[in-house]
Image (cartoon, rainbow, N blue to C red; front, side, top):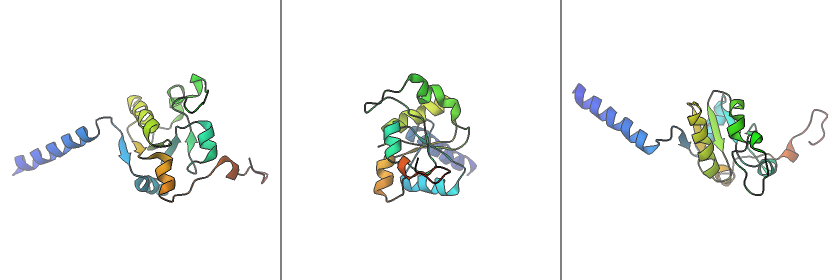
Length: 147
């Protein structure tokens, strides 16, 4: 009986490894929203500054993973050079549609991060699900002016 139980759990573990050999976990926008509600998660937006300024998840930190969409960031401003700015805790990664966030999630895992979650479908799926976003124009400065 013990051997049968052991073999079942061993096979389930192998299936999980095959399912996601990259070391990060893909989560739906609904799961991501739950993580954010629970707190204690670092929300990492890996899009370009222009994309971030137009709309992002409240509380997200922008560290672009690559230069796309006409972005002309120096290599020092990209995730590979700034990876130490990401705290060693649960990290939720997202981009526009889910492609760049896979690259960023892989980069984080390769750097030794163990709790990395890739939001499938990116901010497009987040918005489609009806979850709120903010833009840089929505953020007010301490003196009450828009900034």
